Amino acid sequence: MPLKVSLNNIVETDVLVVGAGGAGARAAIEAREAGAEVLMIDKGIFGRSGVTLMAPYTCMAAFGHADPRDGPDMHFQDTVKGGSFLSNQKIVEVFAKEAPQRILDLVRFGAKFDMIGDKFDQVLMPGHTYPRGVHLDMRTGLQIMAALVREVKRCRVEVLEDTTITSLLTSQGSVVGATGLDIENGEFIVFSSKSTIVCTGGGMEIFEYSSASTDVVGDGYAMAYRAGAELVDMEFVQFYPTGIVWPPQYKGRLGVGNLRYNLKGRLYNIRGERFMERYDPERMELSTRDIVSRAIYLEVMEGRGSLHGGAYLDVSYLPPNLLEHWVAKNPVAGVGQIINLLGPDIDIRKEAVEVFPVAHYFCGGIRIDENCKSNLPGLFAAGEAAGGLDGANRIEGNALAKTQVQGARAGRIAAQRAKSNARLPIDESQVEKEYERVFGIVERRGGIRPVELKRKVKTLAWKSAGVVRDKPWLEEGLTEVSRMRREAVPRLCTSSGTRSFNREWLESLEVCNMIEVLEMVLRASYARTESRGCHYRRDYQQRDDQNWLKNIVVKKENGEKVTTVPVVMTKLTDW
Image (tube, rainbow, N blue to C red; front, side):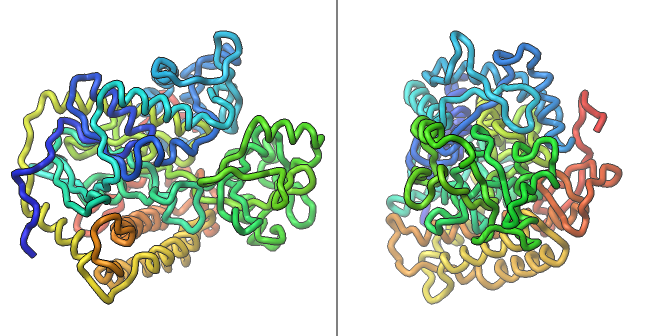
């Protein structure tokens, strides 16, 4: 197939930001303020897509406004301990120290948060010693994103919407740009950059049940892996314990976490037992997400689940008028809709909500250092796309702060690199190979439709790499993933050859990435023969510090290579 892209019409920029959520927007702002030419790529519509918008509640920063004993050192300790001592402590130190300033930046950009006088109204969340969550009712993510959108426009950052990046391009061992697809008109695009920042979020949509938007399929992980980047801690996928099970129109949707946090909801099994007494008798329902998710999953597995296969989350012991006033003040958002908690389907004044865990967050990702640099020169990562901060489990409220701290740092350092490095040439053979891969799908007929393969991947991920794992399930998953890669991926096709807004075409590219991400999760999960944080092996149920106080790194090198590296520790070594 002849190359149909002219390398004389390459889109050039100093800093290419892939992803336009909280981390991407903050990176673009900082790089622009540092004097770089910046191009930010959004798979959807800027300000209306991605996961930052869906983060309802808290953003952690240790101002000490609620309790003067709090500070960055305590935030550092909570994060490292919450991550079961697998966090890169250099990254955590930077995060805890810079989080307050990044919140003040958001205020400068126009974000509003709940205040008590001239201080932030800081709330306590599971995993934190002191109240340090800043918030605006249940609209914290929306408020942060709105402020970032305004600042991106003020800085005159160029944004390319409805564009998906399909691969990263390398030259002389460095990342020098990317290839992309204009979803609106089906045109192939080649980007040349001196620095590239991946801010594509996680990969929750590889699972059957997820709290994320449908476009969060691990694109950044897969393209970085194919380019030769190292990924770390991919076995640690966090599940949110309170996805709704019933009624069926809400199944798998995030939406009732604040019944647990704010209203102190109680979890019961079918026997009427408040079962968290068995799993965390001190914190009960306010334990961390990994423990609560695992408790619900095990109750169901052992035959004590609710009628529709979950657990009962109850707040009906509270006065009805209190619940009515709370709901009026805190409308609960699910995936793409407002969930009516006082309606005919769910009425929390009278009955418990049936809940079950949903995939919520990837604690691992592209392996970076404290300056957001990957092992590939020219490639940076920030936010959920980056691994190292969270270790084995993310404590609540750190995700939004992570987007701002790492986004700002990645943007600044990427801009500095761009200004001090010459532009490297694009490898025509890489472009041609990627063009053939991308357009081969839309020109193929009589193969496998992406919706079929996507469904199989999601079912397999849930079964093999879900809340609870063991050797036979992981082996079955690896065998099936290998078969998919060998037999299904080469036969992916679309029902129509149209190139404008061809959803099947985009889904085909996505499912290829999903398969690669699932394989990384499976291989890392298989290698870690212990239970730690949000990785739980029922065949190795204990944490094993003697053998597993180390990080697992996955890299594409003569096939997939899985190795271990020592945890980066600085000042907290007493685990």
